[in-house]
Image (cartoon, rainbow over all chains, first blue to last red):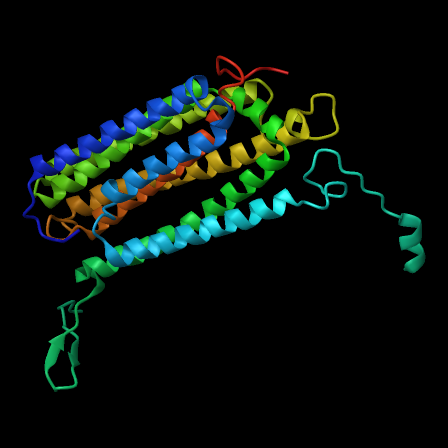
Length: 120
Length: 235
């Protein structure tokens, strides 16, 4: 986005309204999806719709379209976020400490206090 | 004491003198700097979403049950309110760039009103949850008593109140920034030829909207298919 003021307000305004209509349609989709399609994959589908909305906001409302340096900076940081998500998902899939974890539903923590006090 | 502007002069390798421009004149630098700040916000909320996803994977059914009991009508209304506020903020910036300062101020005030409406709706929602005994510190979200919710639900609501609360805090900051922006416009410090502050505050508001785009489905919609309705249930 440049700093000049020689832009056509009416022309640009139409663009903003088009994006608004697109976002409203996607928001409607967000509401009907759990009852209409991909019911078994609601979590993933909702996030996909959210990602599409985010892309529209980034490109058009936040003026990333045509921005090379800032665009790549944002893209790189998003890749890092996705990378960390994938690492955690992989880790969760092979979670080894369910029996002793404080964030699982039924922790079974057996602390040998007697043994611990002897060591002191 | 005089406050006369004294330009700072830099000399290049060929001996030519140049006036150093202040940051006020560096539109791109101001924009890039603000984007870097926003990426730190993305890291903060990104970490929270990561924790949320992790807990979801461990307590999927509890998360779906808790999500099904949130008020989707109020949450959805807030989604639409934020959507329109992003439009008014964008149109305000557009008006500023085309020289319509009065129109820009009107749009900023419209955004402030919508932001306040968002907070009001969020307040109603939290009050409703508190009335039903689901709030931070209440028995339902404490383990080891007769009113305790299942462990996964305690985690869900803990994250829900933390993240929507932090998001609400960003809304409050946004309102403050917009009021400050109006004052800067009135003082002539922000104008069609010098609008980086307006541009960056509009970016900030879009970021607040962007975060909600993920907060809403994460909390309100993942359990939407399990039950009909949306009002929170009592114990």
